[in-house]
Image (cartoon, rainbow, N blue to C red; front, side):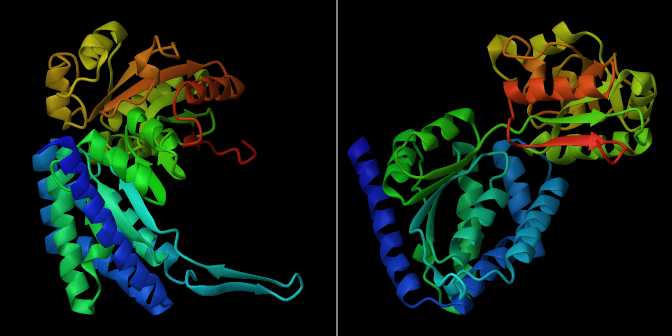
Length: 381
């Protein structure tokens, strides 16, 4: 199919979305918007469907693991539905008699959602719930590896829509096979872009000419100070670092430990499944061959990651992730960035103030505006 024909397919999807949106808005109500959002929630959270989507995601993307994706699909969706449960999104949502200002909600239009292969079900489902809750239609653009998961998710959503008499054209996806040209057309012709994923996707979203909200690298940095509960910190870092094989943008990528407790924390980390690997150069060479993240390491189970990094004889049996001591920060020090794998950069700081400075430097390099964490028992920190 030629490029113009491919774009005409996308244009047809957009036309159906706008027609569905017209009815959804003109015949809308808070009850209708809430019902549609809940239908999408059940489409992914119903246990059998949830498991199928999790298994399909791992099978087709090769990223993450099934048990954690089941947990992610359930908890992220349930948390969102809880947060928006009683939020007014239709009609008059605020009437201030003192100022004479009345606020009336209306849809933004057709949302274009760019979603990553790391979360090919949870991310689009949550985007769709938000869009429908606010009276919008939505067209999802999955990554190439995420197409199968997105297609199945939409089948489940449309099955739930059939039960409540809702228009399936409110929720569509870019026609397969996807392409950069189709995604670009979607971003340029929709009314709001929501982009999650690679820096390339984020840049394209923010320069497409359509209002956009974009989320890129997380690169979470965590400080462990001299007052923190080291075993508790080590266990929480392990849980986050290994969850769904570090596919989440909220997974820790670096830990900065105050010198006074550094050795004790390394011991606590080893008890919690973390193994320190001192040879930074060797890990970097295997993790970024040719300057690109190694696909045999990204979002893989611990045993596969350890084999791909050639560390079978260097870490204890049962190792769940590795921590690599380093001091460098910036483009010439890739460990200071997001690694999408069970690899943690380990920094040492002379005191708490120095730890904060290191954390700020890491965030300025990558991940500014996302997340940092602090394990402490000193509340004023």
